Image (cartoon, helix red, strand yellow):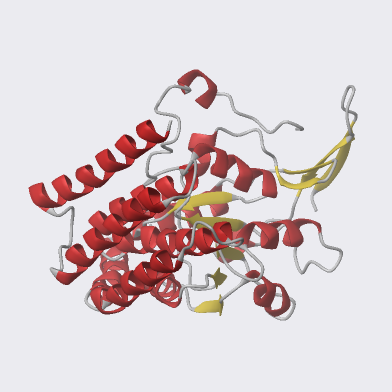
Length: 179
Length: 171
């Protein structure tokens, strides 16, 4: 039996209108009915104070507030609407150091563009079925970072291609520096 | 929150482990993959937009071309000008494959990688950037969806080779 997603509220925060509509329509195709669309992180921070999201798909490169800063604000700002909001980072960045940067900002899942329906579905499923503990250490607050980078990128990923395959031994054990 | 425990961390900041509430679980039933019908609806969203993709993509390519032409290596804000090019190319990298034009993604990816690694901005570097734009024009102009076949592969590979050659010469 597939996931029945019609009761979920999902925010789509993406500055490119075509990508935003695409993600929205894919979510509709999966049965999601309530979708909040925002075109940058700043607008989303305000909107989410009045709209209770169950999870958010967030683009990385946006102005004036980009996806990473949005994630950091959600996790740590005193007026955050929900520090535990599950967040899927959507981006064309697939380099390993970028994935680590996103993880260290506090993202829950990472979805590399190009976007596919299965990629979106698999991230929703991961958030529902594999919730992770959160950790607060130093200035970091977010999902526990003891996780392989490859697992963050997950099914349907493009190659994390800036290491030429030369870091396979590291790939198996990359962890957050502080937790 | 279900629980909240403090763990001292040897020689570092204290670590607070938190098990957050998981209200989403109560709102969702089922556990398997999507049905064929769900996938078909989701795929239909892509198909619907893919038909229009070349219309806006050609405008994006023109805008990217204009941005690259406007870059002045001697200008004080040359880095900012180049970053504007990167942002545009980065957007196109994400869109191409999403809308059925992975060759656009490959070319845009090559351009993004190049812009990120240009050792010294000069006319040669900008010529490489412009060559990417020309290739994008060709792909969109001829509606080359998919990988572009043998010719598409040759175009992308040619750009990637040009980048490698430039980088080697630039040291």
